[in-house]
Image (cartoon, rainbow over all chains, first blue to last red; front, top):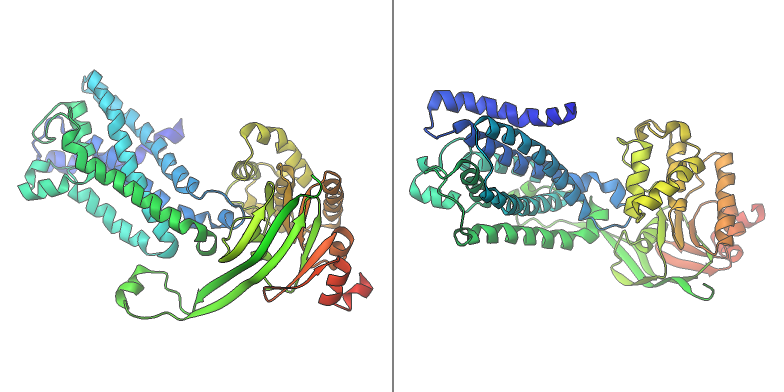
Length: 234
Length: 248
């Protein structure tokens, strides 16, 4: 039980810092800003932690890979699913905030399932690529750190996407993470100019879904090609 | 059971390319995009051909660096051979590099569970065999300790115990008897007798020529990755170490 609270500590502290800084100093002008921010942080933490945890997983399983023949795909899968468990625990915190805000469940919340699935596909693709490349290039870790920071500041986690110029909005929205984030917010909090409407239709998201699936396929392809040599290189 | 082929290897070759300078970073490709890296070519296995019949005890001997462990890893499916063909008739249990891939941070219990599942046990089979594994290793007192606090003898016992308690047809053993004490060696030799009784196939890599000559039906001598002798263990050991036959 205490272990569960511990896993909540990181996103909640992150949330508190950003809430104090942005909620009171900058006044972003978003309705229900604490929830807006919390959803963004919980989703971002899932993505960033899953990739960060999976990145060294194949290399650190080297001793096992060198002694037993098994499909090495289970390593990044296990690693990313472990982070998904923490994510589900964090969702309970979001649920508590929703209760405090007197937001009641609606049928459209069912859309959260495909949205989270889409995010996991995107995250798994990234994690597969990163963990496979890390076997050969040990500086992928540093590159991912920069990438994670870029993903954090380019996504409308703590600011409304409307503060960006129009061309930048279109560019940032190509990121499947941003699309999922905005859609989850409008499902839970209702539509708002900052989130861009309710995700009732799939056709506006085809490109982002294709990017997420394409990244997963690329990750699987790279992983499968490198897998026979993991025992020599990891 | 009888007359079947457990392992067939035809023309197996494995080459490692070892770069003279490490190029493990993207940075190096970025800084020197056109630099060519010189490689050391190491032919660990060259055109190795042999077969092992079901129920046979097969010894592999040779000096350090002759390719014995590489050959075992190719048989276990851990390395992919560059040329040649390997056919395995049955389920393999590998015991390689003094261990089955333990994580030192986890307890003995967790390691046995993870390894059992990776080798292919179901949860039920694992639960049935768990106590037998720990008992054979003689580690009942240390089940819930982290492996980093184990001695090398304890690790060896645990790993060997896992390898022989999982269901298998073919056991690959790389230097099992090197670290264990006299008691455990005795236990292992007893196990070999039981395995022979049960009609299992065993491939044994060892520097203990006495064990090879007394337990193996046939043996193979590897030198520089090539087969130097194959056949009766006495003859193979004679080729390897003419003086060792007298003492064995």
